[in-house]
Amino acid sequence: MCGIAGFIDQASDYDVNARLRKMGEAIAYRGPDDSGIFYDQETGLGFVHRRLAIVDLTSAGHQPMRSSSGRFVIIFNGEIYNHIALRRALEVSSHGVEWKGHSDTETLLRGFEVWGIKETLTRAVGMFAFALYDQSKRHLLLARDRMGEKPLYYGSSQGVFLFGSELKALRAHPAFASDIDRDALLSLLRHQYCRGPQSIYKAISKLAPGSILSFDLVSKKYEVETYWSLHEAAAKGLKHRISLSDQDAIDQFDELLKQSIGLQMVADVPVGAFLSGGVDSSLIVAEMQRQSSRPVKSFTIGFEEDAFNEAPFARAVAQYLGTDHTEYFVSPREALDLIPRLPSLYDEPLADVSQIPTFLVSRIARQAVTVSLSGDAGDELFAGYTTYAHAEKLMRIYDHLPASLRPLTSIIMKSGARLSEVFGHSQRARQLALSAFVLNAQSKSELTSRLTQFWSDEATPVLGLNDQIDHHNPFSDLGLSDLERMIANDMVTYLPDDILAKVDRAAMAVSLETRVPLLDHRIVEFALSLPMSLRRRGTEGKWIMRQVLDRYVPRALIDRPKKGFGVPLAQWLRGPLREWAFDLLSPEVIKRDGLFDPHAITRALDDHMSGRRDRHNDLWSVLVAQQWVEAQRTTTHRS
Image 1 (tube, rainbow, N blue to C red):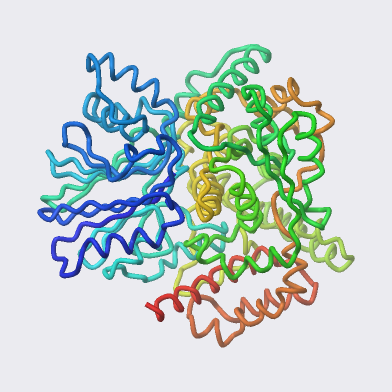
Image 2 (cartoon, rainbow, N blue to C red; image 1 turned 30 degrees about the vertical axis):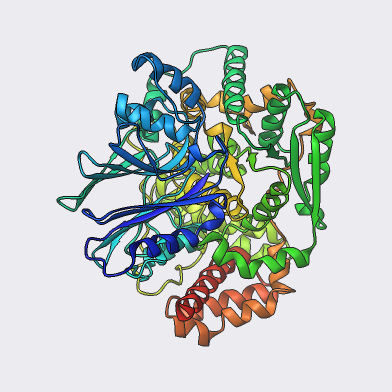
């Protein structure tokens, strides 16, 4: 795992090496072990690399790295898990290869020379983002892994093309333009993250997962193409549905996961795993322990509030599996003290409150290991979220309710929500209010979009917008079921732009590499080819995962209501964060920054602080945005 950045600037009148180093220093925590730069004066192309040494800790793994012929120069972030198998294939194709070291980056470069770029990436199993200079064609290529585990930003600003792992590396260049994209701000408030390809800045985009950007250094034009897409994988999965008995499907998934974890446990540094005691992480750790001759190092954090504390469940699973378990209890003060650091840690505003415990568990793990496996993506691949069950119920109502009666039903539900609030039934009130909002949708795609939307009962308070949101589901043309379309859409939006971004930034902030075995593309393609009955059976999500886990961990240790990985934010906003919230959301501050409608913000703040309504999710997204803006202003002023 590393950090990469660079630019194309032929009109530079500054010390380019010093500028590259400064861009690298902005993300030095992504690679504290080594650094390197490359600059081609003729084209104005510059690379900087920060290395976190995971495979081949010697100088043979130093980057930027040249291919054996000298044609390619690369800066690479990530891991190619099957690079040993690729080396063997290359040795056959090339009738013997002299390797300088045993890094996966060297393997990748050799593959580019022998097989070409797209063919090599198609053969590769891994997570990555890289920049590659093809000197023979005078092309810069940027590429990102299939599911978007590793980040890569790019864009043109004041005539300079910039790219890098994080926005702060791009901000370190003097040409960077910091104009905020209000459409991305709208996405932040509605979904709690900035949906790709947008970033929070107008001039900068996120490279889509499974894509290659090719920049012609002569014509100064670029194009983006895909080498793998979830849309194509979903279409193929629908066309070639797996027709297996339950037992055979379970066996096949178990074998795929075993292979994925076996590859991802390979490293020249200590490897461990996050363990919450839920289905996903318990399955990953169980499979790891089966393949390890020593106790696997597992990590969890606990909270004093029972509603958020998963530590006892993780401890029970760890004891059963015999892992070397570390449990760390976080005080409210420790979690609260982290909040001022959020703009720097997550770089782009992110309002998923689980960002706090994610960073804390990463910090604990980094004290003992350099690599940690996680159980992320199980909910998306195998229909585990409770939202999916709620969506199925609402879609059945929507189908059977005449269009003419939907507005009336919505009004009745909204009245029921208000009554529930009066009698103190806040949970029921939230469910009724959301159902009222959702059933007023004009289409199934809008219904599922509204179901995961915040600021649901009034216009999102971002100024300068028509408040339009695109409810189109890109999988609507495939003939998938309503639920399958919703899940597939989550896999190309929520998964890369929230879940994976959150884990990457939290872990890399402490120089920890995270790996996600469930996102091996062969497992993803397997999941997309399964009938829904094997992914979700009745009301039980992640059905096939549970059947495999039953082989290794007693069901009694796992079965419990899902807690989620969060913090008691609603209470904190009315308690220790009250003054902070009022300061950031004061009408004077809101008017000065000019991003939000101060009246809507004040109304939401009063609703929450008075206890009339729980608006903590709505308020948190605005607080995150305001705090981020304040941090950028301070940073700009200092520089």
